[in-house]
Length: 304
Image 1: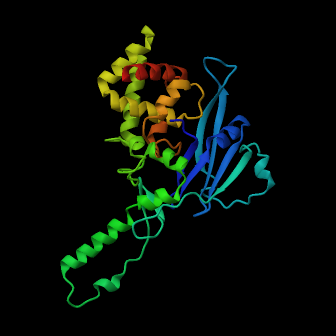
Image 2: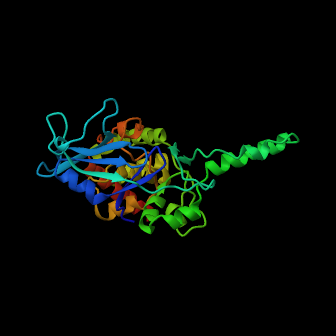
Image 3: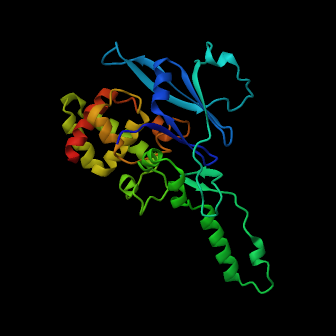
């Protein structure tokens, strides 16, 4: 599938879907895009450093970044934000997003998102266990039910309240808290196991090593065969899909290769360009994107 949105899940549990064309418009104008969550006020600055393409200096290369707008200082937003200065690029557009709320089994909406899971801060009905004859089993059952309901998404309600194109996009990512089983989106999200960020970062470093060891023979099919021999087809697909998703605005991964990468489920948190994500520090530019695209071509052939 072709992804249409940049999906951002806020720490307050709201899901923001930024149309890709909005970000691309800002990047092409060498400006930043500012996302503000209407739920909690969290502000994220999205942009890219632009440099000439190594293979074709007449073309631009976009190195994406995403960071908190002003994590340590108070800041007044006025017209200057749209002109920029020597320290910061101008902001091309601000999206004040209410996002999409995630309903939980408690009947309330999620108030938190952490480590792939949604939760709410629903206060349980303690009066139900305020009896003199209460048993330990009843108390433990009450706690178990409370914990389950406040950490389990009501998928039927979520699907009913969320637009279809957003659901299709979300189901193409692996988000632990969203269980698509038994829904029409299950096929899109089908995946047995997802690696964590450190595992993907470690494998990518090994991919770079294999690439460097084989680059002199200049045969991408040999390099990819060696990568698959060491890590297996499924892990290789997940790693390259993750790298391609992080480089989603890089036009050097294109056509059938981009469609192929977009068809592979990836973890929505791991593809965010942010501090604390080990994948973005794993040497994603140690292999030129044009050569990554060549390797993806060979991966696609071997996956048929």
